[in-house]
Length: 260
Image (cartoon, rainbow, N blue to C red; front, side):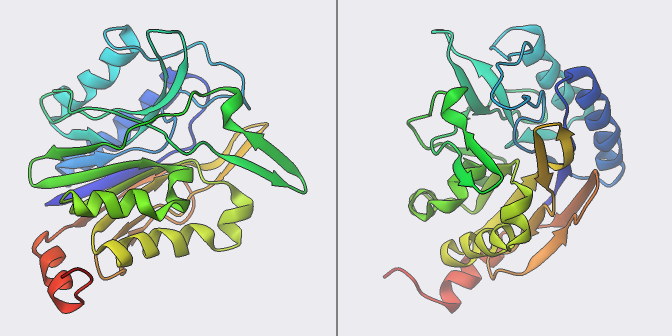
């Protein structure tokens, strides 16, 4: 199965982001990609912890914009998260998922919110988002996908639980920061999650100066269950893709037996 990811430099404006996504989906269609993964807060990138105006909510125009993309291109749209307004008026960092016909496959709300206290930067996502409570595994054709978002990457138990539930692919939708990216955390952690769970990993990251308060690392990756990088985006906005042989999951698990 051929899957792709779209590395973006999302802004606050949904129309700008959708225009770029459409261009890359056209490319994905030409390349016969069956499922495309998107990064964290791809629809509207908040400026710091300010509440964005373009909140997605089931049934509103923003939600329908995303559903229509899947139908129009007949490509599953997976993994990417949006700023989502709950029925209580809370803002959630929610990963939305649609199959190629636009069917809602389920959602995941980011459990582990990003908090850091670097010498030149302090961030607490809890100032904007309400944390999620429940992991989510979805199915899209032969893919059994364990969903996660960015800072979740540092909490390996989440991915071990997905493996135990039968996941063959882990999605890590991200807006990973430059300082930790430069330190090697992104590459090491993404490949570690693939190796220790013997799953494919699609780690789709934001890239570039998104706004005056946010600069993201890029270097999105598709990694196989042996920890080998099948495709890497490095810098810039782009589509990358790879053919996944899902039989590799069981082959690797037989090669190195982690569970009796």
